[in-house]
Image (tube, rainbow, N blue to C red; front, side, top):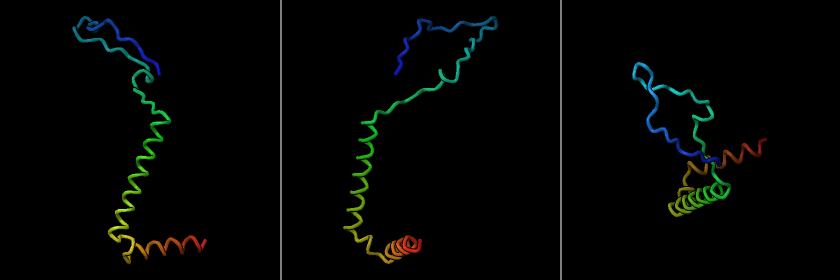
Length: 84
């Protein structure tokens, strides 16, 4: 990561008309970049997995998976896999 110092030029130069000059910068200088460490990515993945497990446990408690709609969907997906 590169850290650049702050310029001492607090007031941009003005042209003859009194408007501020526009400085053209390269595309690379205009864009901000964020770097996320591997550790942060792993922590995010674990966090989302925990949320999924919690949601699944809640669905089991409420007998969501016992509904006819879910059973038909799962059996249809199993059939598609067997048919291949």
